[in-house]
Length: 263
Image (spheres, rainbow, N blue to C red):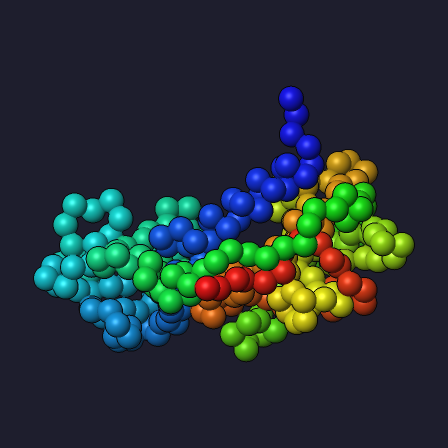
């Protein structure tokens, strides 16, 4: 028997809560440390860390206990850690801590995930609106002229402005309102950052959406029941982009995830 849309949504919702609360999930992030070209310490960690053209460099002694994933012994000397944008990305560990090099717009940082993070230990789930089929609607994607992506500079949750790469717009009608949203594209489909009349009140200040890959005529589906909280709703050290111009809907989207619950 085929699962109903509501059952599929419930499975998606449960899997979201499970994913963010895993040992090294989003709730476990306790630091994002941007690195300089000169070796320096990272708060709470042994060794010296720096960035170069190849990735993140670490110099440490074996007694300090930092181990690169896949290695059989702790780092003793200097090692290169490739960031998350590299197909052969590296991670390291120090006891229960997971150390993840990242790259954003050419800048390198080290993220630290701690299973004992207070926000992970106090997590009690994600509140959400009940599933409603009226919030799943047809949409039509129109790429920018020539199919060329554009860069829109938007504020990020860490206070900096960064370019957001967008591919075009989707047009849709929901709750009697005809609107467009600017979205990004990838092989997996479309994605966007949105806010609406519930944002910062009943829901987090903005949310993310994803849509299936459009067909040859641009047709896809916008299911706002699956509007979800950005990573920065779970930990302050993520650098989520805010909605680009035009993506702040002037009506209430009473669908999707609302807030992080704590106990």
